[in-house]
Image 1 (tube, rainbow, N blue to C red):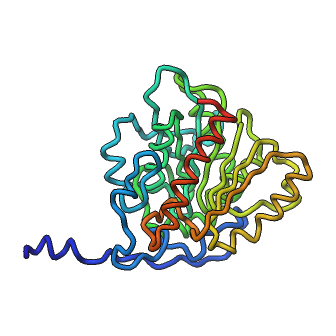
Image 2 (image 1 turned 90 degrees about the horizontal axis):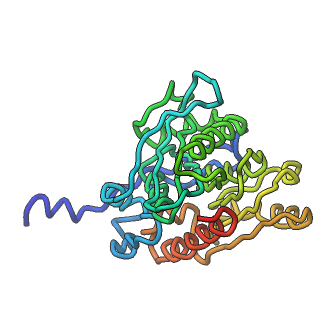
Image 3 (image 1 turned 120 degrees about the horizontal axis):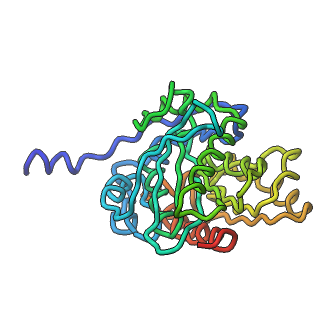
Amino acid sequence: MSLARSFASVALLTLGACQMKHSAAQADDHAGHDRDGTAVPAMAGHDMGAAQDPSIPAGNADAKARLAASPRHGEWAKIAWEPGSADSLMAWVVYPEKKRNAPVVVVIHEIFGLSTWVRGVADQLAADGYIAVAPDLISQKRGGPSSDELPGDSAVKLIRGVTTDEMNKGVAAAARYGMSQPAAMKKYGVVGYCWGGSASFNHAVFNAPGLGAAVVYYGTTPKAEALPNVRVPVLGLYGENDQRVNATIPLADSALKALGRTYEKEIFAGAGHGFLRAQDAPGGANLNAAKAAWPRTIGWFRKYLGA
């Protein structure tokens, strides 16, 4: 057996789970969720064909290859934090292949920063007909805009210092940039994952001009006093085995319904935190959740943003 073939059979090493307290910026800090989404021993449960289903974003294991093979136009953009500001952040922007103008979707990264996996999610949104903008919300904390992918532990340390106000400014900047493009419609949605899921819910509270819908992947609910400010439809998508996050769902459900707001939720059986990234987790529940959650995401944006 060749040395290369021997190495190919060696199990992938998972990175240590990050543990941190809730920051002032977001309630969801991704505690217990490692760099690859979950601790997966020796490729257990990895179904390469299923994980590469082209109708949903690639899981973490396949994101780099999928992104490299994408036919869509993706590019880095330097965006001002606020109109007229000299400070800027980097964002990954992907355009759909279509003959009509498209709505914008801002993709809010996990606690691990603007990773290859997040850029792959943006590419899938473009495949589904949206101009996707994925901003690096720790640009200021890392000393300025850069397209270099940070190691997960470095990003985690920096995200601890991101306030809700800074996050909302960054997301709003990404949305303004996207909507300013000649091929864009003047409305946007937001979707986020884990830390970004909580950020997405908090951005619904922020209510920036042009915001039409929010999707929250396994992110915690904002504080009760903030919920009356939610004016856009919110969709929450959660894994069953994620009580740290799920314990906050009843607050959103009861408060937003009492306020007459649109909030829908779905909890996927057997799935854990980070299921869209960790599609190759053993047992198949995460992959099943990903296959069910993504069509709901696109359906939500089709309903409230168009396509």
